[in-house]
Image (cartoon, rainbow, N blue to C red; front, side, top):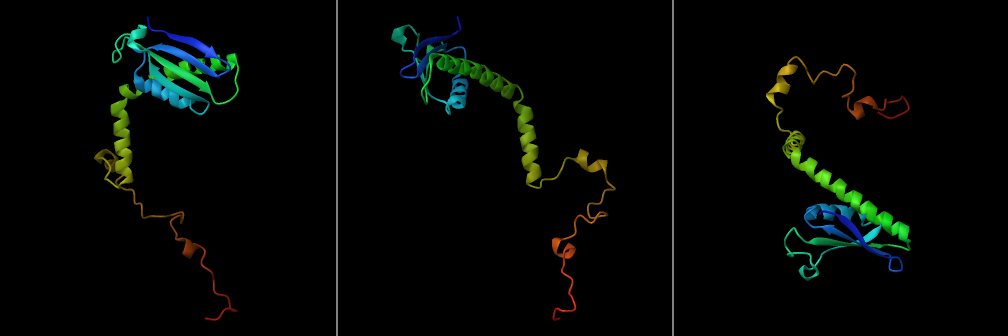
Amino acid sequence: MAEHNLEKIDVEAGTAVLSLDAGLYPIDVLYGAAYVLIDRAYVLLDRESPAAGGGAKGGKNGRFLISLRSRGPTSREALEALSGEFGNELLSQALRRKVTRQNGKIIEEIVTQAIAGAAGASLPQDFLDEDDDMDFLEDPLGIAVPWEEKFKKKKSESEPA
């Protein structure tokens, strides 16, 4: 059964140890969740040893052990809340990973077009055909006037020529 257990809490040491089925989340999801909490806690990710009944070390049948140690003085309630936040962040990271994988081609296409546009590549023909009568050199509002021309100092009669 895939579950997330709070194994132990040591208030004096400021640590909470969670146990998580290794087949439930990929390792990059654990890394992402740990990264989000590193400003508030030290995070240690480990695997339960096969001798402890965790199954093969490299397989998905084992368990991950996540140790969270608070960066400051804490209480039992704060450690329980921190472990709950870690569980919530696991879900968030798993969803983010799923969405990224499902929309990977769209994301790649958008980034490719953005980079190509920034590099000055030509636009697709669909964009060019829409407004053939547009002239970007026309400036009816005077927006493209250079700074020097717009705010040129007028020579006064007191200044030498």
